[in-house]
Length: 195
Image 1 (tube, helix red, strand yellow):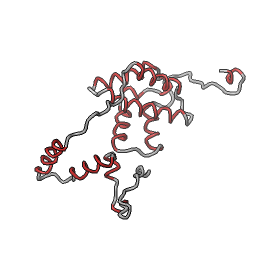
Image 2 (cartoon, helix red, strand yellow):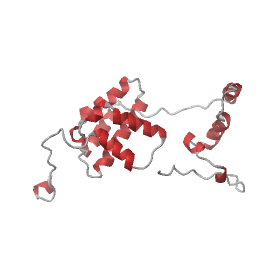
Image 3 (cartoon, rainbow, N blue to C red):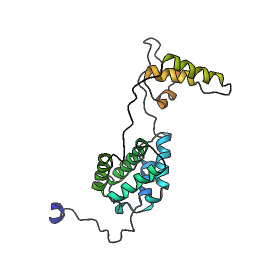
Image 4 (cartoon, rainbow, N blue to C red):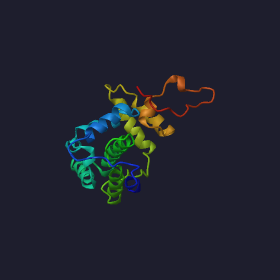
């Protein structure tokens, strides 16, 4: 405010709230120009791009708008943890745009996410407290192996996941050239490269 009063920073002229980039346009821009994201994140971003509430100018968003988007997600019978993933991606896309001088009320984005977490509209995933027993794994693996149409090596992937604590995407990116036979290890995987 002091910078505006001193004439060092001109306030944005926003006489017509119906003009300016829409939320969906900014999400699309982030998707096109930002770092590459995995398949699930891309689907989430596409969902948001097509969401009715994201068709408004970004300059018009407020706390109620964020709450309405979150409520829309929960009405789709999403768990609060899943809704949190979508809302976090929405907020990060808007922050990304604001940092590139798009007309986005950055403070509103930050405050809205704080309120959604504080009011427990959004939730973190519950910690898993147990692993399946070896007997349970045997039953699961026997059922998978009994399916003659199963082509994906589910048992191999599952065993690697259990003992390496890697995510599915990391496991599926592994190549034989990653294996260091001498030291009997596979180095930490790199994120997928941007295309």
